[in-house]
Length: 607
Ligand code: AMP
Image (cartoon, rainbow, N blue to C red; front, side, top):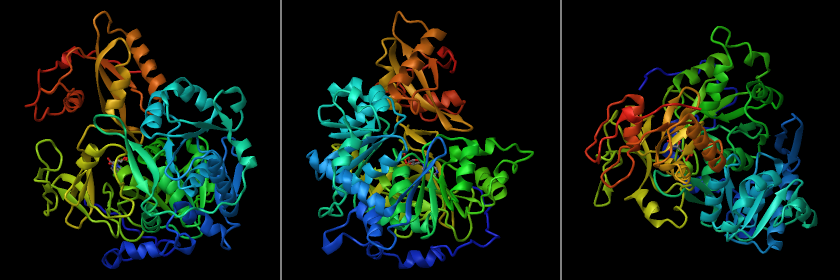
């Protein structure tokens, strides 16, 4: 734990929403936070889309710009809150006409195009459930998630449908409608043009009564074993979205906000769509991919004031500025509108916090949350100091704790109870006391894994942390085998399963190998079946096979052959040991090891 702090010598340009941390925490109640939201007219409940769109459209804010979409060609399309209310109403009517209603699942497999925002919010208006899928996933993760979610409607493009869904369509028994954004539906059997349906739909829609406990969003996340887990979120999450954007992102009414995360993930959905729109600010949407110049240009041209990004992206930006002349590139752009930078998703190196301060003129505020928490839980705030390397302190209304761990590295349970570590500096599992509004309500169709995530009245995060004497939290690592690669959570089981579908693979073990830019890269250790040889050609074939099935986001970047993978006595590959051996770390507790694997048996190479 570094004790160095970053004080803000230059006072913030606007008064931070959270000025006195202790005072706000002491006086905070979620019931009061709920009162900041409008609710559906006539006491008909709480609906995220009403708070994000319709309430603004019905006010003098209707003409304000909700979305500023920057195309790949740098063209800019603006959508006002009034226009968004009408297009989302149309989409809700499209769903109605298709017979899709309350609780039915609608999935998106789209890049960051304007239609995505219409579909997301129109689905919520219709009280259907939105299941966002990451467009860089390959056919296998897409089909798996569509199946697990019982998705009935998929909205995608012709290209994504052709390459990722068409070949799997027969497996997808629940999928009734595929709506194509843009051209191409005519040539694709079993699909319809979204545009044609939208043209016929009315642009007014009355949101049906919505209980705060109605399911709204289904986000998939990965576990150590088994299929991906569908984390169920409800409309009440809006209370936490609004509050955390107020306190942790310091959003003010006249902000221009840019969250660089893809809306296929929880971060991009909550802070790239829902929360900023609830605040009535202008949201920047970039259809393009990362490119340092492009990003600086967007920050400058779109006059971004609040920027929420990720450590991998910051590291990539840092790489483009030579140590000897770090200021040249960023300072060739007018970044004067920028007033707050935050980061999430992976450990943020202290160097990145300081780089922000020195090169961009603003330090980076790290914060922490995960798919299951639905909203930011721990943060460095706009007011007061930053502790570089620390995730910060719990948000008002959030009670965090460090739980004592057992030999398996997870919180130790005795008769359902866990032990809170009171003394500072002790490593343990991060837990959150249940009861915040955006807490996931369970994993869809998966009672055992839902139950395992809770103990007594705590939600167990699977992250290992320490808390310092002043109550700041410091990330140590994951308690299980999942890891982040370029900001995306990778479940090794999913990668191993895909590899094992190749006839050459008898078994596979997947780990995250540390990487200076991506945090980790996906590395697979593969045992070959008899008759297959550990050649460069086999390796290339397996890399390509995995990439085709899984997509570039989760496919292994490196494959090593190992005919003696270490196993537990129950027969599971010991990924922890593979990782320790790969990194030359102590092997730790190997009492459950069935037979020793031989590191010498590993033939290395990467692609
Ligand atoms: P996801 O559910 O995909 O959003 O991933 C959540 C996980 O990302 C957490 O459980 C952490 O392991 C990691 N994570 C998120 N934010 C941070 C952070 N600020 N520092 C370190 N790890 C983080």
